[in-house]
Length: 211
Ligand code: B12
Image (cartoon, rainbow, N blue to C red; front, side, top):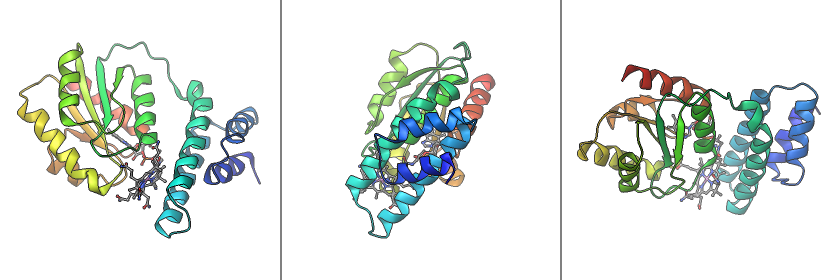
């Protein structure tokens, strides 16, 4: 088994003590940070499928998520670009009712690396908190909303509607997360959708420069 396959297998099993060391060993062997990240994302896909099939339960999902987060911490310095923050501020959060944050954290890391100051509101963020953050921070160019549950897609819709109703302007709204599609993004009035953290960073930059 290659080191990357070991990382994947151990994220799936939620081996929190082993994963950081294996990620480091994979890096030391010359694997790219993006390939290791991709393997961990695939592992979470397997965990999700096993959850759907009733083979794994919430505690196993939680521990796999913890293992992945620890692995991402090791990758962080290799993924972050180090661009001087000059594109403005990006407010990011996972919408109300939703506690998933791994994808949101990756998007935050990559968008931050593209040159934004990040204001991360965390998870379970009500619309008013997004709006308050735009008011509280200077130079907000992007508001990014994440959602991983089909049951929290209405909260994403409500968040965008509330932002629009607030009358605030001068920024663009970007949405994403596994159940979100470009069609849904368009329907709820988002300015952009991206499928993963890398394309989210590219999109955020494009949007900010278009303002
Ligand atoms: C880990 C996990 C959990 C952990 C979360 C821990 C944490 N700190 O995040 C815990 C155990 C808490 C959890 C709980 C639940 N979960 Co869960 N979970 C997962 C799992 C296995 C992995 C998610 C993940 O981290 N993926 C890896 C990351 C990197 O991918 P990602 O989040 O999709 O993010 C990428 C893109 O989507 C995109 N992106 C993400 N956000 C954004 C934002 C923007 C702006 C942009 C542009 C892009 C973008 O970029 C990211 C990076 O490339 C998924 C399965 C899956 N396949 O996704 C289920 C899954 C999401 N969970 C599910 C369910 C049902 C639940 C629970 C309801 C279970 C329960 N009965 O309690 C609860 C809900 C709790 C709540 N209120 O939120 C279902 C959702 C089904 C659905 N369609 O609604 C899934 C799909 C599992 C399944 N197959 O059934 N879960």
